[in-house]
Image (cartoon, rainbow, N blue to C red; front, top):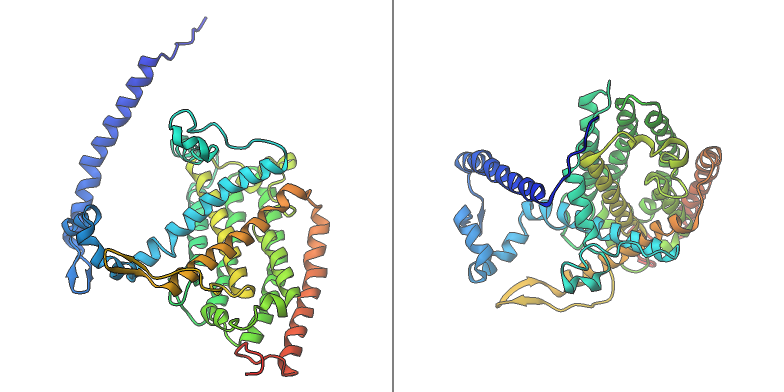
Length: 425
């Protein structure tokens, strides 16, 4: 009869030491040589004529007297805006905060506690955060879990789908302006780029489900394809009213055109349609039919585990941030709002102007508010049937979106509003 070996505390310490050993070995033998090879062949960037060598970069990080004079110039580099703000790091941090808020918020609505214990007994000052370290624990769990590939799965597509979803979500973020001049890619057809990128999501979900070689994910993938395609058309039509009034497809110019009136006041029907279709694009309640855990387990991502599942969830919440930010940009004046900040000066160095601080504040507050509204239906609405969902998308929301277009044309041709977005001028 086989016996089960007990896992003692000594074994646990040994496993930690082995893990530390391999991390040091990999870092020393592989990562460090790669870094030096890259530094040898790639020229160092220059900021205000100063070459940023690895030694200078390290000195900037540990010595404020060296780093502060170059901080503003560093913030204006394309790398900073892509990697840190308003690019990937800001979006990932926003998504992390929204994930934690959603768990606590829904728990309160359903008379539960939500994340509570993680970190409370380790760090005394963390008790006031109410389980904030649960996010870190979940991240470590996802990183350390094995990624299981189903038998017969198409491995290249199975592996590529989570990466493609994250890249597509990052592409959405790249065209969203958070303040005057603070956008990764300020292009004239930014709104078209948004809709073009959104078209990748249903196809990627279907391919991921097909590559899993299981009927349950494939049913979820087909549902996701039907749902997203049926709601993309009213989503695009709802934004046409904004284009008609602003006379531009550039998202920064659309925000500037709302300096007198937000478009949600002139086009409330379009804002309503955009919000509903955004919920469907996100596969959130009441449009979570692609998941439907009681019928098809967890939808098209059933077979994904470990960090592959983590990447899909990261892409989902980055998409939530992007759609909330696009709603703010199109209908709520983007970064505009009353002044709330002064110039930020550190060690005699101007880091942020009052205008930029105000813009960041209002953009973040508005976007977080819309994200909360998108989370809210999960706590108060049941799932709807797929026939009702499709009929609502094809027969009702498209008709309502056309009414929004007629309202925009009426405002424009009756002289109530000019293409620049300012009444009377």
